[in-house]
Image (cartoon, rainbow, N blue to C red; front, top):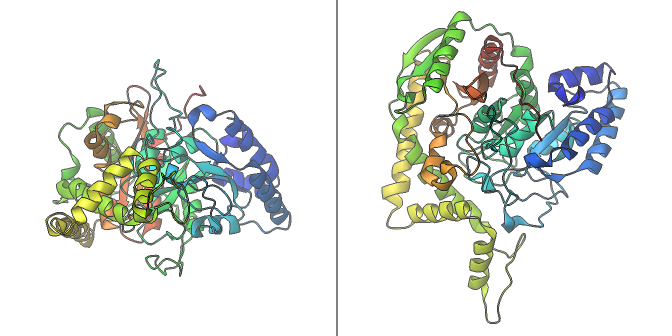
Length: 495
């Protein structure tokens, strides 16, 4: 990293405002870093010309004394966000050539705030995956490596490109989306901060849909302060998204005092999974101790329906995906398969989807179609919805009893190698979401904070789960945990 690309978002903002650096200068530093980092596979659509134009416009605003927090800040945008005139493929062949004539609400708000878009970031196809290996572009690669082992590791998924880019210093921060852990798991794997807001805090308009009742966009940043700054710019009501809440957006950064004295933090016994690695158990205990030292009150709690979360999630999410992905038919936009003489519309649908969707997407569409079919709707989908209600009620109960937040591991392990058994076995891959899916099912905010390194020198994170709409309190708790942990490690450059 150069000195400029080593700056946090907050540090870059302050130096831009002080005229120590210029927006074009900062942007050029990141563009140079991106050009030298193709081995990471993080950026899949680079937009240097657009970035330079936006940096010049941002500098004019800075010179005029009009400087929102993100003015002149170079960001990476996950390929799931539609960006006007820029390829937006959701890492799928079926959207080849699609250049939206519109801007997603989130990216429009970031542009309005003066942010600079460096390009689009790699991800699992349609956000379906936990290792970034289902992407049509090929996998993103974690900038971290095990000690004395050059084997490439996954950055996690589905927001793997976002995580890799932020960890490697290729952008000041990035957008991600989280349907079952797709912000928090890759953040933990790469030693950065990842925040999934309350469902409805951030507009989903213009974001390619996976599972509409679970998807939520959020920030991926180098530290908690940066997450607070970026969330404020991303969040807010949107009349184009009926699920987006009409609530005021607080100044999250202003609330970062680090004072958590008297806060009650729950530790759920059900998250002590059988076979949990000792390092994860020790990290969890250390996190508990650090929060206690800062004045928090730790309380053992029970979330009794946690054991049913993964099965319920892997019924509900594929069911919604099978409905959402029905629009990709080769008729209006994206890829259309070559047809043979005599082929009709049914053959066009079949060939286009067979060519355009990868194996994991096809698997989930078939599962979703099956559980929604007439003979199995009540046995699977309706039952999963009832379980979801019970999981949400578990959280409501502990919050009603005075718990302010919940501390859990973020992932069941550190980053694993690309091409590992987890990738070959879908069930093993799905287990990577064991600590995160409950948050999406209940619609709660959750944040992953890097806390330590494992014996191989890879980052490990802890997760804090907050009350609905109280991202400010959650961020302050995460800020205290981050300060107590003192995690400053960065990957050694090899790319």
